[in-house]
Image (tube, rainbow, N blue to C red; front, top):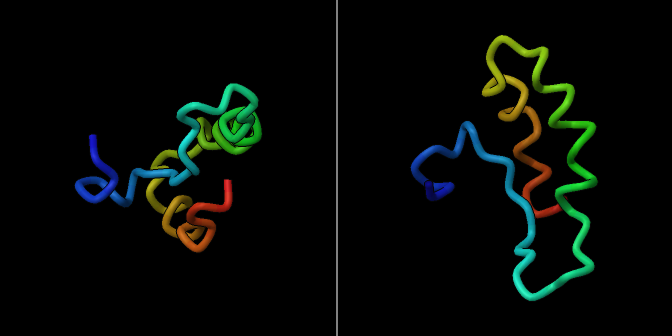
Length: 55
């Protein structure tokens, strides 16, 4: 699914292609773990949209 079709559900990260040392997804694990307690993740993700491409 492309990020533009479901932006409110997206967590933008830098591309990891061709980088075997990339750890962006590992760094996101605590955030993703916390999201499991949210009844609607869109409200949390919308507050964090300014973090685009930081992860």
